[in-house]
Every structure is written in C-alpha cells, then in structure tokens.
Image (cartoon, rainbow, N blue to C red; front, top):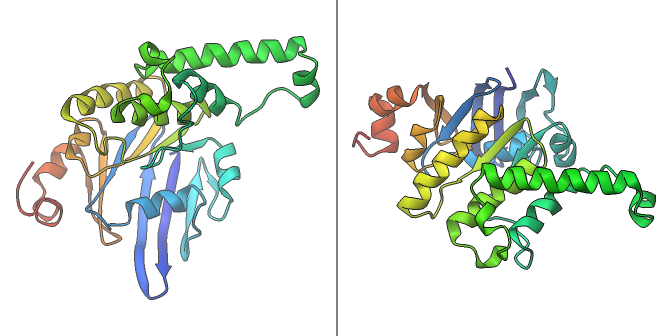
Length: 252
C-alpha cells in the first residue's frame, strides 16, 4: 500500500468539506477519485500534498505519517501533482519546460555550475536524456521546440503531466487531466496516461469526465465530502446510488 487516509476530515468553519474519508491506494495502481463539482475532490488533493492541514484524521505515504508535512517535504518524498490551471512557462519551449522541472531536484552544487565541472556536464546530460524520454512517453516529442503558450489546450495539459513526471514521483496526482479537452484529445490523453502505469508509476486521478473510468483499476466516489461508493469501473457504472447522485439517474 502506497497511500492511506484514515478518517480524513476537513472543516472550514461550520462547513465540512471532507468527512471521515478512508482511502487506500496500492503501488502500481490507477485509482480514480470522482464526484460532482463541490464534492471535495480538490480538497483531498490539497490535504495529501500538504497545501491544507486536516481538521482530524491521518495521511500515510508508504507507511510514513505525512499528515502535517509542508508541501515541499511531501514533494521530496516522491509525491507529484498537476493542477487544473497549468503553471507552465509560456515563453519556454516544451523541452525547456520539462528541463526546468528536473531542476526542482538539483544534483549539482553552485560551484559545479559556475565552473562547468565534469559532474555538472554529466548531470545536465542526464537531464536532457530524461527529458527526451518523458516527452516520448507522453507523445510530445514532435512539439518539443514549440513555445508552451502556443500549444493547443490538450497538449498544454499533457505538458503539465510531463513536468510533474520530471520531478520523479512514485505517486502522481492528476487534477482534472481531461478538463476542457475535445474528444480526440481525450482519447489521446487516456492512452498516454496509461503508459505511466506501464512505467511503474502509481496514479491517483481526480476527474469528473466519466471517460476516465476506462483508465482506472478502481474508483472511489465521493459526494459532499462523503464516500458513497468504491469499486471497479464496471461496478460504478451499475451502482444505483452513484447513478442517481452523480449521473442524475442516467447510467453510463
């Protein structure tokens, strides 16, 4: 088990947005966290990554209690994430954006950089090789020289994923990775994200586009901060409570 929450609860004043959530995520798994707008999905991400502190409950990562760690310490443990609004460097190329993300974990000292030492050159070569591998993995190699600001929306979303992968996470949290995409972009992105699992990464996806079910091993459904169902994609599609709460009574 890579991630576990125990009775995770978050209140803002008198409003409970996350109530006693017990979630587990196994190594190498893709888990979908779904629910209608306002269900508490993004709050859950912010709790796991240290952006918010829970009112009560615990968060464990690979057996370690990370409940109240700061975001930079959570990231250093190997938890990466994307955002609904991508924090890209618009004036950088695709390639440069991913290279920059690698430097969140510097391997060269200031002296190495200043004197252009052998160690620095070797590290930079590794960064270039890793960047090329990530772009190939995510289907972005053919646009690597394009400015990020000029990319279509779908490619900008995938570039956000590429930047997160460059931080070398063991657990990757994807926040609405299909948001705003057209049908072709969605199909392409689902195929690309599945490759992350093939490479050994564990993935937790927040999404309300139900096409994400095709990608997940398991699905955890919440509504108004409460768990209403957990199971396989097929079980989710056929559960009456989920269909009524999430899909308005129309099966998917």
